[in-house]
Image 1: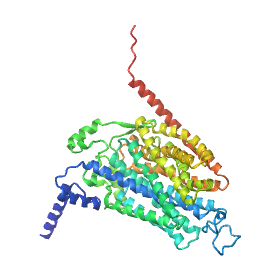
Image 2: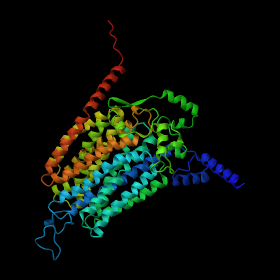
Image 3: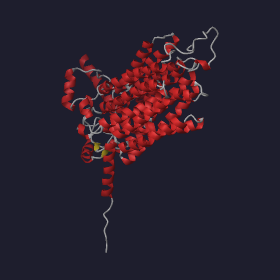
Image 4: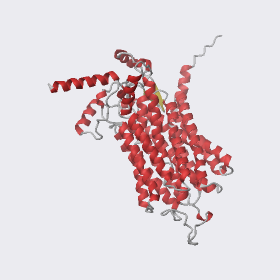
Length: 563
């Protein structure tokens, strides 16, 4: 009798969850909101899809914003870890012959810039190496847990760097290990957030959506700079501790409320091909519509099909990752998945997708330029503008990120209109090289000129970088050559961003070495890298131009000559 009663109770619970439309694997916060709304507002009618899409967009926006929030403090704090002590008044008892009295050991040497560049490299090389593995892990686990744990780990490492000052730690190995650990933890952010947004928004207007959404990187840089600059002259430990606390708090919110996929909240998983009004249509109607819907997006000389991909309703819900899915499943389970869905896409197969290699290598050089500005711009401004303090230099550097927001949205919008992302990137690269030279030559002339040129430089540097890492990655991750493979998006995203991250690691390291001799040579290096990024996309851009001409010829009506 007890067994029968347990079975009846279990059946009633299952029916309750089915009626509520929310899976038991849904976030706790979502379950709570559903219960409260069902009791307090049982007759309330809302467009659930749009509400969930808005919440996912907002939560992932603030999620990756905090990832950049915790990356930025090191670029501001560099100005006090090593500075020109002759311009400061030494405290009583200071040795008159000690010209490094104001610097923090172990950065109190003439090779301080090289050591500071090594900190950047420790973070960025570990980030680049772990990114490839992180993308494959993200395909196999619940993305909400993946992001939450990654954010908590990143917050801890940011906190550990700050307490180095509190506990008077002067061992360079400690800071290198903390930076390397932070780099590994930060790899959870990009594959996870892009995969979640891709699941919820599908293939419609990715350039514009991702362009607006990608402004989180610039906003995170701005807020991280402002927060770090507030404490850099008094107690630079707080420049790391407070961003770490903010990231930990946002990570808790993500764990409570972020729905990683529509299925968990009772929505159709084929939203990339359906409008909200069609969500309530019958299954037979959906099946009929699937046969007719064959639209595509052009990426270079290839068409990225919008037919069922990793978010397709053809995938049985029971096979998707849930909260009860183990992080590393057994070989038997993985073998069953390979039979059912072809298995997770391999690195070699992802690299064989047309366009992945070119965009990855182009991003290598684009990210090298962008991250050199990210980590060294405050120091460059401080060195070339003698009348600005470390705090003022950090605050001025945020103008570059304001331009980055505009560039990301502009590049995404133009790519949507033209359906030629490579051509858009080439145009940005072409204008960026002379702008870098102009900023290096006249940027320090006056404060106003510095602001204007920084905005323009930010637009041109971050525009193609944002476009490749978001919209292009998402489109290539659903390429028709994958034959509907449901697990490619995170791997393709990780390959492209991971390759770019290698460039991001090399750039700041080289800037630290070269800047010891001349900042002019640093800008020459950035201009050369910009041209390399341009050349790598010329073949795809040419094919896009040919396609545009062909489409215009087809669309134009034939001319009839009447005599």
